[in-house]
Length: 97
Image (cartoon, rainbow, N blue to C red; front, side, top):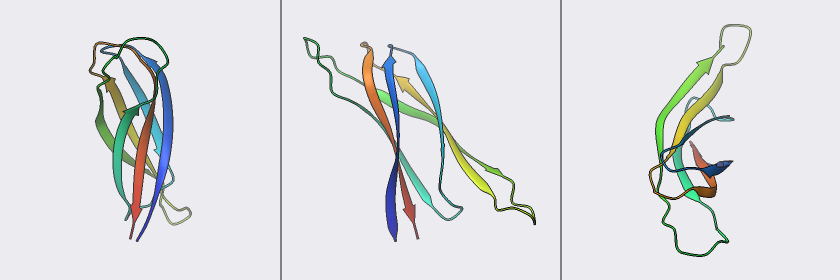
């Protein structure tokens, strides 16, 4: 079994706002684990960040007799908190058999 991480980066996600992402680089037998994590901040106060990952879907493209299929994951990150998230990462863990 092998594992690796695909990391995507976002910034300035206001309260209630969403951002869509996509990634590729995994195969048909891989399992994916997706998290969104707020980064560090450098302003005063102690804001509480709450991010959710929603609407995760995988698309298969191609795969006929002339080409290998391409697998892409699409997802949405939503800011459920009251403060703007200045920067955050979306980590996609890829677990291969």
